[in-house]
Length: 327
Image (tube, rainbow, N blue to C red; front, side):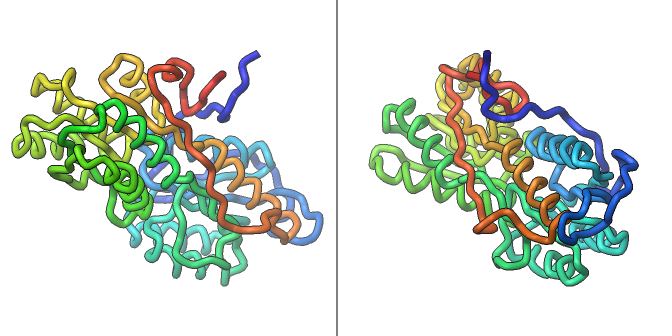
């Protein structure tokens, strides 16, 4: 029987302009207390539903929270701290039982998380950290540095450790963008015959990735490789390289492990991607929130948890589907 390394997820619909309630009408206690029952509403606030990674995050959170007996509401801030504040304040005013948050910036999110905690609402963070501890019940993230290192090593080997390359960077306010870029640099700087000749910010977006890649190609038409902070930007770069007739000559690295990226790895247009354990991380973050709501106590010894990523290459790309790697 195949062993599921990560739980399967499906896309979920939700709005970026407000919190939309759905789920069970399960009653029960709205807050913590020793031995309490699950119940009330968990607000799920994420980044961008058009990106399959965040859609998977929300889908798993909704699924598990409802299994545990909660109603759910969902919203997306688009990495805008002001929109995040509006969504969080709505959840606070609605006196939700708990909040699952994928933060819009490490520093920018501290005050609003503190506001929720001061209101007696536990907050569990997933995918990204904030710059203070002692507020959130959990900060569960992918080990982005480890994932970037694994991806960069595989990509450098495919490059035969030489050539010129460019980099596509994620949203600057998202700490993960810098961590991944630093992880790439820590590996690639070890190989003197690999030379970075340009970089562009493409904000995790496929279309922006394509536009940025077109600009980079106009300045560096003979590049040999591309490293990208996520799959969507990498897939945009592939579109630009295909239009330029250079896709067979350029090695492209992605990060996330989406279905489209797995297909690109399988067909040889993407060298590799790095699977983030988003299902596992979301599961843990919701389970912590549930424990705190029911008992008033977190099961974690340390609120910060980093989950290792998995390299996806031509050997296992066909085993990856919906952020699930099967063996």
